[in-house]
Image (cartoon, rainbow, N blue to C red; front, side, top):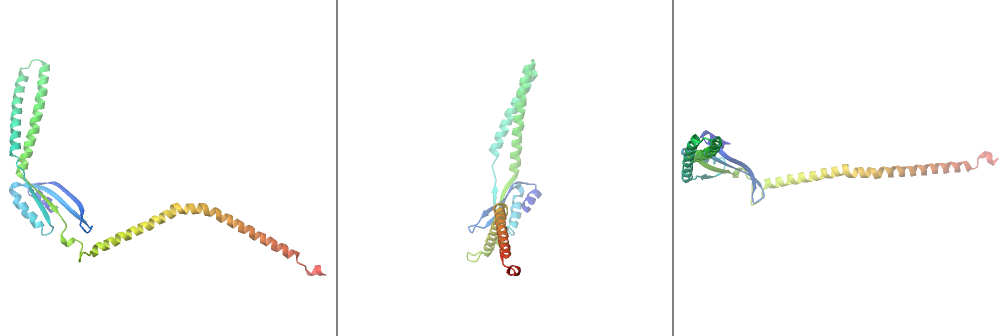
Length: 229
C-alpha cells in the first residue's frame, strides 16, 4: 500500500499488483507480492530512494523497465500524415460529387479514414505518456524476522503447525465416523435390531407363561390334608 500511495503521490499509477504463495525447501508456505508502478521519468530517482527506504522494513527486489519508442512514434506520425492527406482528397471528391450514391460512398470511406486517424492518435498519446513515465516492478518477500525459527534444520514452529494440522485431521476423522454411525449404520441396526428384540421378547414371555402354567398344574396335583382323610 505504501508503494501504491507513493506512485499516486508522484503523479503515477499502479500497472498491476499480485499476491501469491510459494513454498520453501522445508515445505513452508511463504507469502509473496509483486507490484508494478509507473512514475514520471524525472522523479524516477526519488521513487527508487523511497522504495529503498521501504527495504528497511521489507526486503524488496526491483526491476526498472524502459523502452525506446522513437521509431514506433515516428511510424505513427507518418501513417497519420498519409491518412490526413487521404482525408483531404476524399473531402474534395465529396464536394464535387453530384450523385447521392457517390456522396454516400465517399462519406463511408471518409468515416473509416477518420476512425483510423483517431486510433493512431490514441496510440501516439499512449506512447507519449509511456515515454514520460518509467516503469518500476517490485517484488516483496517475507523478512527473515518473520520466517519460522530454524535451529540446525529443526523448525519448532513448523512442527507445532504440523501437529495442529494432524490434530485437526484426526478430529475430522472422528466426526466423519460419528456421522456415518448416526446416518448410515444406526438406521440399519434399528431396522434389524427392533424386530429381533420384539421376537426374542415374545419368545421369552411365552416361555415364562408356559413355566408359570406348568408350575400351577404341578401345585394343583399335590395331595392335601382333606384328600388324606
